[in-house]
Picture 1 (cartoon, rainbow, N blue to C red):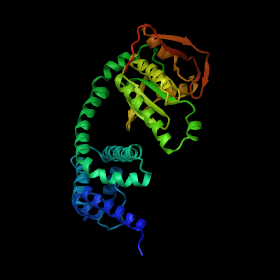
Picture 2 (cartoon, rainbow, N blue to C red):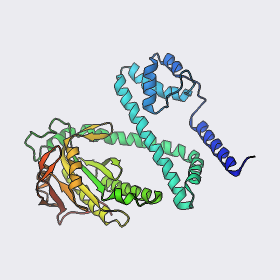
Picture 3 (tube, rainbow, N blue to C red):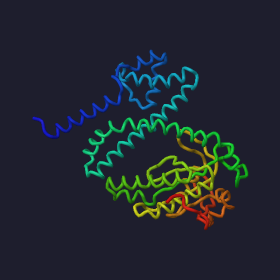
Length: 355
């Protein structure tokens, strides 16, 4: 004898299967061996590229790929066969697609679920069922928007990461003597971290919705301020954001705005912010190097609602009247030894980045 719960579960499973059929164009008819023979590439190579793109590993001989899937894998394999890329570079590009689209779709689904919970008072299971029902109506517009924005973002990244490198290298010599640990790295960047104070303690006393609202508001406010200031939000790490900017001045303005805006927001705890200026390595959608590590270390030393900078960053900004520096006592910082931080404050001529 079936129950309402059984009926609901059957309907849910049917909806998910229908969505899968609508998303995966065509029947799954190709195995890994089929694709290997089709591309003239070893099975192991096709498997590695498939995994990098986010395809789950199929059972041996199982028909796991549609014709559209075969075309997607074939496009990446073709770049190797045509000599445009070597295999490792193709795998890196494939991982960028797989990892970022995975995060993107999870973000989008959770946004739909949260909308149903907050606007219609649904419980989590019902909200997830409702999200599945909405997806068919948003796939095409989101997919088209993603295509257009990808090209625009690629154009902006080309300017940021290649065309303006030489100017950045010249600018990065401010306050330097040439012996710095980051000297061999290519890109001059202001690097900043901002994190919420006492986040771990607060989160233990929040329910699921309160925690979600806090995290979303923090990331949203940070993203708005960083973008308005001409910077880039590199990534979020729980209660912390990492950003960069092309000049120390832009980085300093963003850092000050973050500290002020987050700390004055009644829905958020205060933020600690740190900023460094130096050279970094950009790889895998992230940035690396001593400049990044020092900014991270300084963040933990900053007081709530303040911005700390190191001596080199203070020297690079010293002639700008928009900024005031208050030297702080020397601190021993792991991996850097004795560091001479300064409190960064705004001068009388600074204007806010956002409303």
